[in-house]
Image (cartoon, rainbow, N blue to C red; front, side):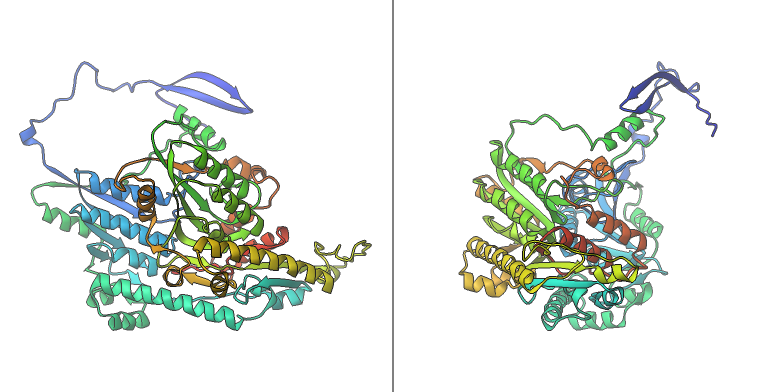
Length: 616
């Protein structure tokens, strides 16, 4: 392809590790004004007075913790970056208010509450926040109701349809294929293996799901009723009659205006009559040079390949360490998907981060921010041990999910904070393997076996468990369960008998966990940070340098298959990619189900959440 390049002087070609980088130096444009002739400015009295509104767009998944950049810039914002925009808008004296453009974020209850908290900070600074929605499901609308006004175009639709849980079961498909799922578990509520060994929910699983949905449904109704000043019973009626057109939503006081964003901006202009309204469309958005013909663009490309920016030299300032425990828990090192930037939580990587925080004399307190469904029982225990060695103030902040292994690593904290909608608990253990001899025989593949040792077939992928193998494996799971529950009882300062009754694989919302003593307090990351400072003898309002750990993983490792020290941990990110590409074609939970299968294939025992709950 021919490309015409103007105004550029090519100055060097450098060969670096197999990459050819062409660096360019820009020449001044031919028609640029002479430097000795400054532009003539209007007198101050003639300048129009400008009023600025920050437009903040809410979309994407909002991962927690440092993220490696995508190949051509940031693929999605982290939660910390999004909250930082609200804080900056609240402090910035030039900003008169915020236009919040909500565009289908894929978030859970904890992140939704965190973003509502960001909106509240802007409002506390005396500035109004205006929400614009084209369409709105539950999470979109719950965010919007925190704003001073909600605008929706006349073709918009409000789909607050209530809640629904769908669980896909694969047993019949496995039977047709000749695959036998062998499930072992401790705790009647530990149902992670049920989709592969049953055709419907067990009574315990159904009871658990009903209680969780009841809690979420009450939170949904209460939040809408309080925010929109509509009676609770009226909200129930509106949900039962949804979806609603924008006009119907307006008539029932769920939104304030039926109108487009340009009409909102016209209305704001009238409020500030006599002034020029300027909407900062990309407020707080980091500019990225994606032009590979420029030096900056080429350096950005190389930076993405090598895992992000070079680490800065550490300062001697007092610090607060935020350790981000995010993703499926695996043994080995963390890994990251090369294209999406999604990561898994490896025990080696996390132990290194915890050790850095606990041995750094400038770190005064540690906050462990958890957003994980659990995973490997062994990896969870290894991380728990390293956290037990922490001798500084140590506080846990639970995000959308901190269940099973994600709860395991929280047990040694001085205080545990959760959001009302956090999914937590699931204190139990499950083991499973798939016997594939049947499906192999269907395609003409047979297996002949010679063995020595009564239980030599425990790890066989073709045959199911013998009675002896099953008993041996159950003994291991029972021991891991005993370890888990005793450590949880010690951490919660609760008699083992009392804790064990709350365990058995049962999953709770943050609301329920607080009542049962599994967490200490409801609140977000800001509340947890303030408490950690207090424990360290510091003023909660005092600004400390923040140390975010672990550092972002190298995306190149994910492409080349490295980064995990042999552990097959890239499945969850691959599953996420499959969900994004084929989500409308696959049954609900399919990608998560395959993720669990890969985990079970590698791990003898797993402490993993039995379902992937998404509230839309």
